[in-house]
Amino acid sequence: MPKRFQRTKSEYGQQFEEKQGLKAIYGLRERQFRSYFGHGKGPDLIIQGLERRLDSTVYRCGFASTRKFARQLVSHGHIQVNGRNVNSPSFGVKVSDTISIHPLSIGIVPFKELTVTLAKYEVPSWINLDKKNLTAVISAEPTVEDPMIMASVKPIIEFYSR
Image (tube, rainbow, N blue to C red; front, side, top):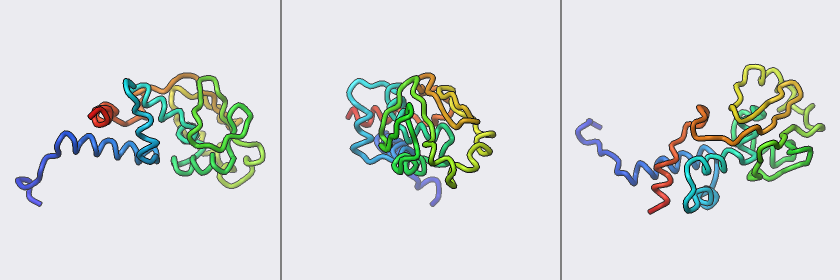
């Protein structure tokens, strides 16, 4: 289509597109996603809520190559938090929580070559990863300024405040 006939997106259209993109990144349904955007929540609190989900944290630790795969690993019981099995992808991790792979799962295919993969992996600043023992400790809260978070939350907040 020639440039002179292209329409510019309205502000609503841009906000909607941003919302749909972020929702797809985290693999959430509308109701789940909307719950993170409560009244008065700022961008940092929203990102903290989304990034502290166990499936997102497992992905950020490098234990899974995609968020969908991280969700599957959590659902199938391969991940432990503070030594206890957790199979809920929406489980919220806190600062000082330790995330590890279940001892019986370390020998299966997704985890056999994980130490080799993690050798080149860059972890976010809010996670301390022990690449040898395949454990991660949450050392701080995630922030919007983290270079791995490439989302603009402000338009989405404006979208939900309508």
